[in-house]
Image (cartoon, rainbow, N blue to C red; front, side, top):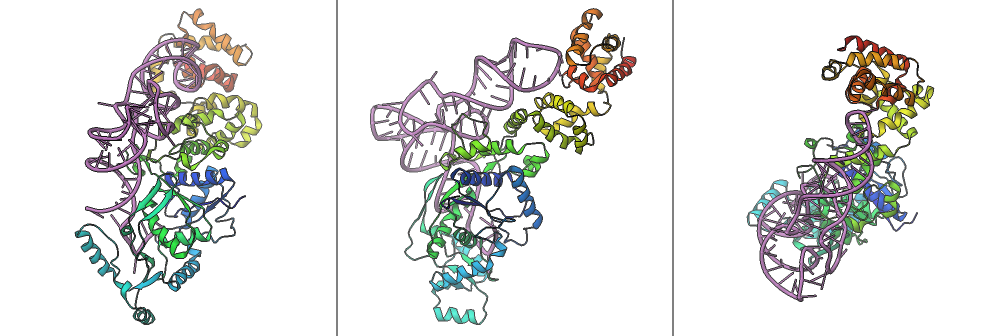
Length: 487
RNA sequence: GGCCCGUUCGUCUAGCGGUUAGGACACCGCCCUCUCAAGGCGGAGAUCACGGGUUCGAAUCCCGUACGGGCUACCA
């Protein structure tokens, strides 16, 4: 592991792992893995109102599910911890002392009301917002004595008078320039001593020797402020890469209105982590513009920051569905059975012991199902008829069983299947003879059998289904429905 | 309001001065076929947001406009 590439994903545990956050995590991970660098997970839990332990756990489990393993962070530690911001307050305090000592921070006694008023006024005039530096002109003695006297105060960054435009390199945007006026003497430490976000991140990224900051676009405007903090701290500025946002289908910020937004929700809907990872990797990045199926190994081998696109992307569930289907179809029977049984067990239809008792049966079933679904949750309705007596769908009964000839077809099927070998070929051969013998269309015969066996006009392939169902149950269902069908 | 960022088929994107503007999803048609899928073949779909430049030549470079987004907190 080389130390020249150290990146981090730094979520706030104020909710589940969002799709956008997952992509940010994925890009950091892929970048680190590509260069044999270090991927760090840091929990930014400084907002006590909204941060919860549950959310932290949910984020960890979502990352585990996606396969985004980290090298330093919660649960596994590392040389630059702790990895929870709430456990790093002493470091922020030390950093602040450093800035005070070097003259880069000064106390401000302005009240919230005063600041609000000033901000309003400044905005009215149009143009430059930000703190007007009132307390910056306080004499050192005056400020010190007021602090000593216990006057409530915050600590502000003293942006150098001669600091010109702030220019930094962003791998995806190129050179980004902010006018000096975009950075005011912002607050580093609040009245209660806690650090503000823009100060804490820089302290953490410095302490953790972060080489590349890969994060959401919404932080681009924070970057000049952070750059000034790095300078005040006299620390090296990392390389930045700001990822544009992911939007919902309507081009608006992705939210509950758009359906599932958390990684967890996608897992529950039957998406595979492999597919979600593949889809997310292509949402704002491309290998060559042609390749769409990219597994983790390929991603690790090819990921690069310079192929990240600048424009925001709309999350397209239909493409994810297609991709999920591709991954499902690529599974071996064993892999698919492994996933299938989870869903069947949840539905109360089967369990691992069942698989263990008849592995070949499940192995035969697997490919029939896997090539027909896009999401794992579709498994249940598709194979239910093999585990329980199906209910005959009303419209299927009307359209098929109550059609003239259906009863004869079922009766004939019973006879035809009575003595043949019970395997697909024999079953098919036996049933194929019926249409002609009965003077019915093949479709009419097969659909009648299908509905009688599965309860639906749409099902897994007929002959295979019968084989899997077994001779006895097939005969019983055919007989039961023959009695109710139209001759 | 100010500052910053973005704009190629409906969607994700390729393109980085000269291409019939390529691929993928979705869509349509045909083939395969016991239903549904999968698969194969083919099709439609982008005046490259708009307007000016620069250039022999611009989707590609520059400027402006429009639209969208972000930041502008003692949130993160």
